[in-house]
Length: 283
Image 1 (spheres, helix red, strand yellow):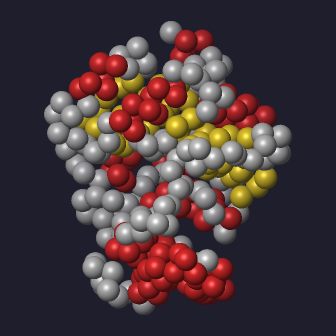
Image 2: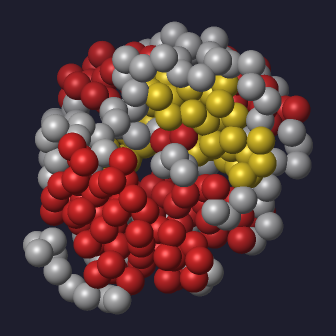
């Protein structure tokens, strides 16, 4: 009953589909946490018995398995949000890994920043050395949340604004989505625009794979670019910021010509997304 004894508690909401080895690695990292006041809710969008071995291996952890028939990351997270009862909640990816003190540092931040409703940790590659852990938290505005603000680095305090917030199902992979990404930034940006105060704390480390520019999927990259423009349009971002987002991939081509295929696909996606062109093949 460790969950009840901690003064502050956190619910971890994971939408998973098609990953078992990676999910097991994340759950394994939870066993090493110095803060144990957590619960895990896993929205399982897989066929029956796909994760049976994972369920058996981690039966010792406080995990609630929620079988979902819908194959949609945004709809799955919305279903899991209905189950939150803790003081804090987060959306770990099913292929990320926490450091042993990740959750302890999250709780420490919210305890010492009662005005904060949202926190962004630091995204580190699996084998990457992260920034030192002695950097103070800094505020994040509606523009800064576009930089490494992915769902798996987001942590939230349960508050009226955050408790009522839901993912827009037109963003994100899955059934009913019009745009294959950007659901994470959309969720956070909506909260910031409604008045929630967000910070970035680089002492909170979350490990996750980074793009492999030697194995680029142009169609997927195009889709990410298209979703970014759809998001900018939805939130009525100013034209200077839209122009920066549109032309930034071209600047990156000049900086990293060896990554030209990736950045060119990203530019085309953002260009077509802004002008509302439809090109599911990314051509």
